[in-house]
Image (tube, rainbow, N blue to C red):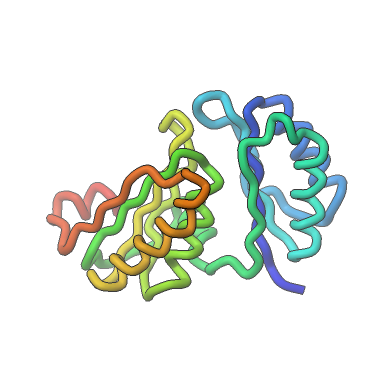
Length: 182
């Protein structure tokens, strides 16, 4: 059995809470995060075995499909996803800084997973819609070429759904910026 992560994003808080309850009643999954995010949407992030996460996400989509904004299931997510979500990443050095924004919450985790699996980079942070009117962003670091490749792959991963907003790569960011983001 493989480790997986899944997420649903709902337009309403009531739909999100009911869906979260149904997901944990359907399958043996753990809730990583379940909360209201700007602008009054509700997100639920779960983890567990791939089959359990798939079943839980499908249940939530079936129950409240009309209020669902987006969802995903990732089998074998990159190990740096979880610390980046929790803001617990320990980064010592920033050679290049990559930043990418999406219009929704679910797309940023998919983009981060793609980025981390594309090149040797470290995820610094995944900000999931909190205080951003529903938008989300990721920050990552590594060598300049690796960061550029990771950001390009992340953009491609979410562009087809129209969720890509903006991105930048800064080669050798100033020490004052490094202090702020670390």
